[in-house]
Length: 383
Image (cartoon, rainbow, N blue to C red; front, side, top):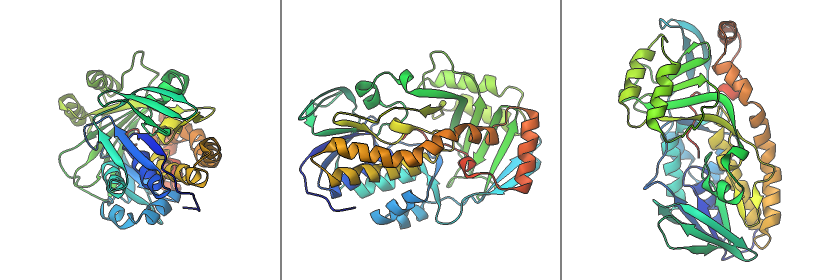
């Protein structure tokens, strides 16, 4: 990090996914006293594969965790597209250069290990109220006693409580992109650990990713916003998948049977978060809470990069958080905004809406590699 003044300011970070521990690590190095509060009782994350690449790979290297990330990396090197009878219709290479693909579970754990000796972690609790004044933020928790912090950072994902409490209701900032995605861990290892296998029918896609040691099934389908949708209502999710994939071929009937029996199914809307500003006084947002691009949008890479930038800017001017927040936002939006614009393009490539679009995509896979926006076949849960 750059030159910074030492400070004893306290910072509360909501969320122990990807952005939260990265922030805690770098803020501690800048002289702040970070506390991370996580709603879950322990580290939680899907096993869905994510990429650490580009600027995030450089952040990881400076944290000294690159070797651990590589040890946890998957072996997937290609995507194979199949028809309803399992016959190959196309194939493209994935990843390259210094990219590291690993399960999000492992990424979150490695980041937590790097930060845990430098920050306070409080699990099984959440923020219920924020009251700020010129000198700090009074925070009320669901379980713990109220505390006061100099700054609060919401790194609590697409359905951010900090964003709701400090900026307004979710509906004002979260835009449904016409797609839902579900992921389900599979107990058995895949036949080929180097290939992701994907089956499409118009408006629907199913992929099986080898991950590490066992497969991950991902269901991606086009649908309008479901009235009253609750991202925690598993019974609703099972009904949605059963209806969306009725009559589908390949392994889908077998995978749907596993869906009906599952107790660890995840389903959520593919959404885009748009906000005019990420800061409100002494409160600021990071990761998906600020700028979710939840379909093939490099969410973990952006979360790590944005966390580093925010911590670096606060370290530069610890006594002027407002100025630090402005610099962070100006810098990080240059990375985020193109990804926000590319969500529809990625959806068209991976989930063609028509048979004509599907045929064109399959032809393209035999001629040219997919654009980088379509590299992430199993999106991560909100960070």
